[in-house]
Amino acid sequence: ILLVVSGGCVCCGFLLNQHYNPAFVSLQMMKHAWDNYKRYAWGLNELKPISKQGHSSNLFGNIQGATIVDALDTLYIMEMKEEFKEAKEWVEKNLDFNVNAEISVFEVNIRFVGGLLSAYYLSGEEVFRKKAVELGEKLLPAFNTPTGIPWALLNIKSGIGRNWPWASGGSSILAEFGTLHLEFVHLSHLSGNPVFAEKVMNIRKVLSRLDKPEGLYPNYLNPSSGQWGQHHVSIGGLGDSFYEYLLKAWLMSDKTDEDGKKMYYDAVQAIETHLIRKSSGGLTYIAEWKGGLLEHKMGHLTCFAGGMFALGADGAPSDKTGHHIELGAEIAKTCHESYDRTRMKLGPEAFRFDGGVEAIATRQNEKYYILRPEVIETYMYMWRLTHDPKYREWGWEAVEALEKHCRVDGGYSGIRDVYNNHESHDDVQQSFFLSETLKYLYLLFSEDDLLPFEHWVFNTEAHPLPVLHKDDGNKEENQK
Image (cartoon, rainbow, N blue to C red; front, side, top):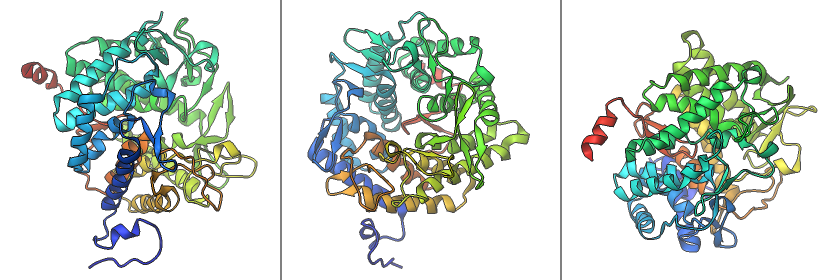
């Protein structure tokens, strides 16, 4: 039976000759995003889809090709073979790390190192392994601090590092230095060089020695003194992926990394006690903590936590398993409300629970949507772990909103104000839209045996990395 569609969103055209297949729609969205990047910005970092030209962020310094490297595994998973082949050839001939430029260690790690590792594990193509290890080696000087807590910014030619000038008293940022673990463990695994894993295990040691206020981890840590900066705690920006990597380090270790496991469940307990609150309308949200005072605000980035709580439910104390799944479901619902309460049905960058509002952005500088994946990420985890059909329905609502408001002739663009009647586009197609948002949509609408959770763990940029089983090390040695 063919689905006959009239009017509605742009994507409906894709459905005319398909059985109702949302996974096919997300593949077509990927094709539109990729083809336009290729047409107008090939080899550059990102695409400006309205201007139809390249866009470069200072996060990557002079390294080019962020969209290509970030999209490799999505192309592979979606079986876009021709596009994957072109991307691989570009990496072989043009991906160059010998540049005199200052880069964000965190962003280059999660997008470039993560993207290359994932492409290697999926395809077995040696070029990706070599490039990942080469780039990993270039990042090592970032750890040359008195404590071994890495700098945020590194000149990859000179090896000189520094921190963001705005970060509390020269501090490194929890979500940045805490989001290297998965990739660096794999770099050691694939290179046979233990130094990568040693660097990230040392970060754990520094954190373990410190007193945590109320069991919480502040967002700022000084890499020289080894002391916390200001006591600001967030499960959104500045903090988010640190918690995610504690859980995933344990899962990726085939559940042998007991330190990671303990740190994660202890942190969740502190978050529940001090940050998780319920609004008068019954919505569960995660507030931010500033020196003991709560700010009743939740960022779009924080919405990943619904999926994290659900993913971690299985390892929680047995009387808490159902509770963690329920917590994930409640966060998913709140984040869905943040989408549903806008005109465009796309979520704002941050939303508040004060002054009589619930799950609504009240400040102009929080009303934008830059094609972020976190809400769809949580839908994907909740679907896989509960098979409640509402998560696929909510994912489809997001597809319709993206097609209606973000799709333009030249690709996909973020929106400046999701509460407006008319789109004002920001003219950037973020590399993470191809790496994360579209991949999570595709996985949400695919069978569970595509990248099953017992074999794969996703880095914070949605790059799948394999679980390292105890005998894997010997296997690698034998292959050399």
